[in-house]
Amino acid sequence: MVPLLKRLGLNTYNVDKKPHIEVNTDICINCKDKPCTVSCPAGTYEALPDGRIAVHYERCLECGGALVICPFGAIKFRFPEGGISYRYG
Amino acid sequence: MSFDADVIIVGGGLSGLSAGITAVMEGLNVILLERGEYSGAKNVSGGRMYIHALKMLIPDALERAPLERPITKETFEIFCDKNRKITFSFEEKDKKNSFSVLRSKFDRWLASEAENLGLLISYSTLVLNAYREGEGITLETNRGTLKAPLIIDASGVTSIVFRLLGLRKFTPDKWMLGVKEIIKTDVNLPENEGEVRTIVGAIKGVKGGGFVYTNKDTLSVGMAVTFDSLPKSEFPAKDLVEAFRERIGIEGEILEYSAHAIPYYGFKNLPPLYDKNLIAVGDSAGFLINDGFTIRGMDLAIGSGMIAGLAAKKIVESRNFSNTEVYYEMLKDSFVLKHLELAYNRFELINSPLTLSTYPEILCNVLSDMFTVEENRNTLINDFIYRLKEKGIPLSQTVRDLWKAIK
Ligand SMILES: Cc1cc2nc3c(=O)[nH]c(=O)nc-3n(C[C@H](O)[C@H](O)[C@H](O)COP(=O)(O)OP(=O)(O)OC[C@H]3O[C@@H](n4cnc5c(N)ncnc54)[C@H](O)[C@@H]3O)c2cc1C
Ligand code: SF4
Image: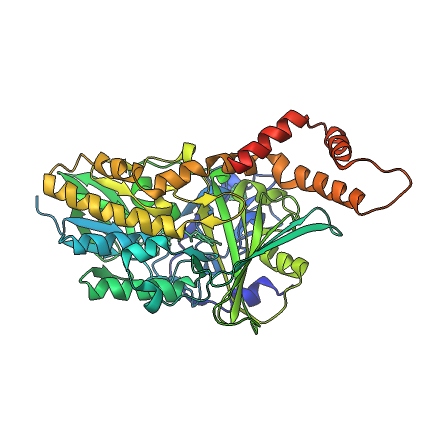
């Protein structure tokens, strides 16, 4: 299996200075299953040992899934100004 | 109140560009806003495009559009478990009804066609907010504010203007995640042939399936699965396409990894398609057919875009921007809503948990019995009924489901 970061590295990103995804980690700390960590195709959400979530917004593939993957509404998502440009699509 | 245009279109994908081309040809003053640096920069599809709508939009498109290959062979693979799968193929040489496409090439070409016809496209323009003001809708973007009495929301599945006006509620069962890789390959096929493979059951737990499309010198390999099934999948979303590719035995250099959400509403659950000063086209309207055999969104995007362009002309001429129902009336007469309605039975069928796992397993068991010779042998129908009973499914339900599949 080719690792995620290698696959993401094939894409052209123009990463915004400000994150376009914000997560309310106070909500996450009470969330057991953390569905976002398995539902994001870019591995944007990483579970930390302290029960919080790290957000790697620079990996985002802009699929839009952030708008539905958190059952507790802890994710605030808008598209970035720059972001990804696909060569094939 | 002064407006910046008769119509503002949000989104320069297939639906937005088709709406723009049509509206400009109808003589309207139109601005299209696209957040990508070019049309197609953000867009992903499987992708196999049925070209009936494209030919209506651009009659000589077949000669000029950057299409990959005509689809002349369809193969279905249904995995029952690791060791057993059902495969069948259908071939029709010289068929030119659908083509494989790559969106960043195709959309960019369509945008240049639109610009040649006089459509004003503002790239790298991201719509951030929308609200009603005066007799129209105001859009706030990263490059300033624009107003129009009529907005066509062509922003894809995330449906930005409808969402900001509180007209959309998204849930994980009504959206699919599409993940895809482009694989470099030597395609051993003549130029006028191409294949689509549809694969179900290769990855357990997920609701949906996988696809392989043959392009000129690459393969598009991917999966489309509902968001609510992702936490039940044997692989996390980030490894889904890689695991799928390994299962079906495709190797080669990866050129691109992409992902996009796909609307999965079905005809009877479509979201609002119009509101005062506002109409939705393509994915933003939920116009997608997924009937187990194909995913069809691109031709519906082009078709609904064209209708929106024509409807815009009528609305602008009438100066009655509340009467966007005109668009809906025109849609009802078109292939867009008719095909969506026709596909609804099969949509319901594949939505049932029986279809993607239990029925294939039963079929595999029956076929396995058929090809195994032992002393005790049953007739095929008795074996089938026995296998159904084993799973607790009444025969009457199977007959009903079969009826749905062909109706
Ligand atoms: C993996 C996958 C496989 C698929 N396979 C097929 C297939 O084989 N055949 C088929 O017919 N269909 C397929 N589809 C569906 C098809 O891709 C869609 O139905 C089609 O792209 C819809 O076109 P659209 O123009 O409505 O939306 P999009 O193509 O999504 O275009 C929307 C545009 O709006 C822009 N935009 C979004 N938000 C904003 C904003 N806030 N401001 C400014 N611009 C914005 C985007 O950049 C984009 O250009 C597939 C989809 C996926 C993801
Ligand atoms: S973002 Fe939502 S789903 Fe993810 S960990 Fe936080 S609460 Fe759970």
